[in-house]
Amino acid sequence: MPMGIPKSYETLPVIDFKVLHHPEGAPVATPVVVVTLNRPDKNNVFSTSLMDTFEKLYPLFDVDERRQNHRIDRDWEDLCAGADLKATEVEREVGKVGQRYMLETIFHIP
Image (cartoon, rainbow, N blue to C red; front, side, top):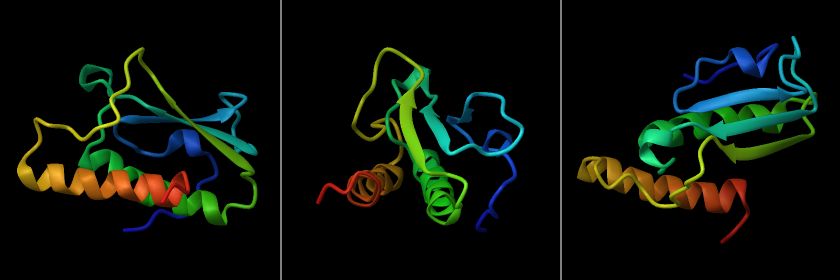
């Protein structure tokens, strides 16, 4: 089910992410939103839950006129650009599709 544009992105019920305004703690959405990967126990590897969240969150950014920019960050020293290898085969395949989605749609890399 698609999410509606929230008053505050910081209150969204997301898994494996932190979504903050800049400045942090603003009561309503600000022009800059920081999306932080937050799976430090998994080195922030791409998972189906990350893909699901991206697929719900980024369309909101596209239509929310308050938001002018967003930044993707990570909440840990390590960042693994691959899929979660401990996931099931189906989840790994979904992770590959999600990685391609991120590269093409979010980062505009063919």
